[in-house]
Image 1 (cartoon, rainbow, N blue to C red):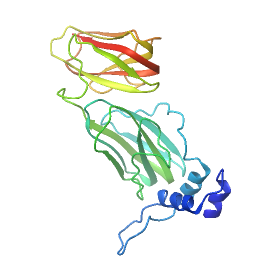
Image 2: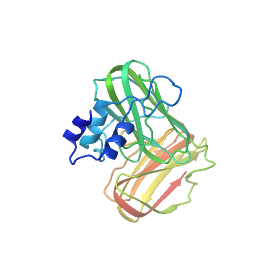
Image 3: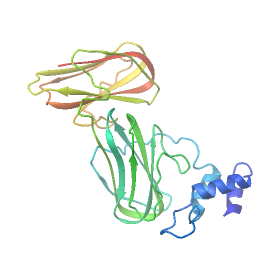
Image 4: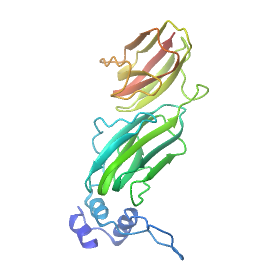
Length: 274
């Protein structure tokens, strides 16, 4: 294994680097043992991939593969080395965030990372268990985009993946109050920030407007759960920051408002009126 790692490495690996890669990519032992089990079982494929640099850097953001809160994606399958990528937008104030992979046959590994796509060597959570039943629980969820990777350690089929969280009831996090603007909002390209609006029963109209500042932020609005780039009730998608979503007879309950940086932006104001 070490010879293969050295063969594919861009520059010769030191003994310390070899040890670090072997330990970080090792598969956990299936059971317990007395006197300590060490790092686990050597994963030759993952070790060689990490040594080659295939696990380094940030890949292009995944297209599609959006997880909706509490809604399982089923029937996932692939061969060894297959990578299936998903994203999930989590609103401010959310709690109990977890990603659960389960069922089916074979062995798929779960990776989760906030803000950018995970790799085999860069992640926030990687249970790395034998089989498909793996869970990543995020103790303190951040508002924004979580990236999820399901990767075939061996061929797998019939796997389910679910991302879920409990949304803030409105007592905390970023909440838009009727007619009260939030000002000075800024963000980087690709960043997301989410607010909630509590719309009372009997409301005749709802208007959410972003305006001012520089750069280009895109507005997304959705009732009941956080919007994504592919799931929303309104997305004006205009150049610049001046975007408005208007709803007649909106349903009561929690509406989610997300600003996503098409490019870097600053000085933006956001206001909800109902």
